[in-house]
Image (cartoon, rainbow, N blue to C red; front, top):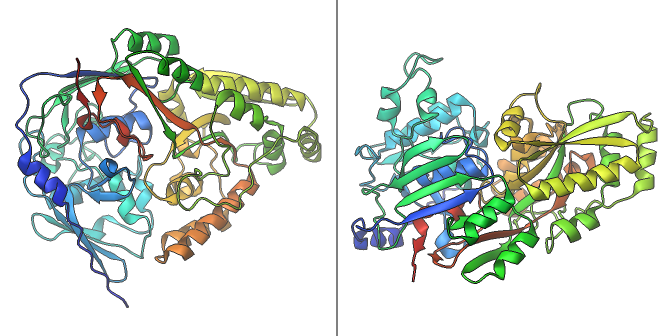
Length: 530
């Protein structure tokens, strides 16, 4: 057995903390407009981008992507160093000292252990990340600032997944627990953290109206310190209508608007003096998910017919201007993407033959297509898909639905949509995010898994990939899984959209690296008005 020891030191962050200025006297309010409401602020329950925006600003994760370096690679944060031993099965983390929760208590190893155990017990959010490799008994505190994870087997994405382990204040949570499944910890504070926070992040929650607004204010005791012109108050508003969103930005009532608008909207805004449109290749997949567990979509011939009926060329040229067509589930710019996957192409005559082989007659099938309220790309794709399917005798009803309702519906098989328009951003910097996280049955129950895809061979490949330490061998397994997934048509893989976001030119410090939501970390922004 080989032993690997690697201590990674966050020297830059330590020096930055030492030199940090005290909290600034001048308040800087920042208004961010998002098309979808924040669905959750509990770090054990977040799955989508809006919830992640809330969580990364209220809490600190164990590790953090190296955003300042333009990288998605996990780097030091709450954990300032770590070592890997026992054939990549034991991870020992040294925690940074002096991190304070919002109530003044110092963050310790017990809080990290409790946070992971809480996620595993609740079995919500991204708890599936550690399925089969880590149990509550396999994480322990070895002193006040040392945490040891002992995995059941090597787990290739482990460090990457720890960017999703946000630390909660154990004492605060237990003080507010209600009766629940556990005798000692009750409901793990689930009811309390549904509308309160218990974090150590740069901001504390000021108020939250689930449908319209989340307000946050700077935490003066934040361990990374504060400097002049940083954002001290955040107004995170939900506005579904694209025209209203544009008006707010153009008038100066908003500082930044989200990434979910049409490319033509950003092109128009880019021509406006005083505005900036940041445009970069994304680590994102746009696809139309098909519920493989509900007839007639259980029949691969029906799914294939729908995929072959779709006009990908028009979608790319007219809706996702400048974006590459998706080649399977893993975005093209993410390492581990399978180059052998061929993109889907429209073939109407073959689509008709597939339906005939399945015994389906024209006019026999009707499906509901769900897309988030106010999401214009989703609407336009729906209209195109509707027209395409009508040619092969399938009716498609467009259902514009609040995003929170789509997320809720995806949680249970009984309410899971049949067809859904989904933008899916890389959750953690590893191909596992868009393979295991979307197409392994243990991950079912989120908007990412509306297809409820099940293929035993694929599941086994993904499990083997996770347990494979040697990188080339590991990636080969992920690529084989991608090849099989594409052949089963669980989704129409449409595009890897270009990431665009618009803000006023007084906003400085914005960086997009691809990982979920980390570009909207308000602590990184300064406002420098002339």
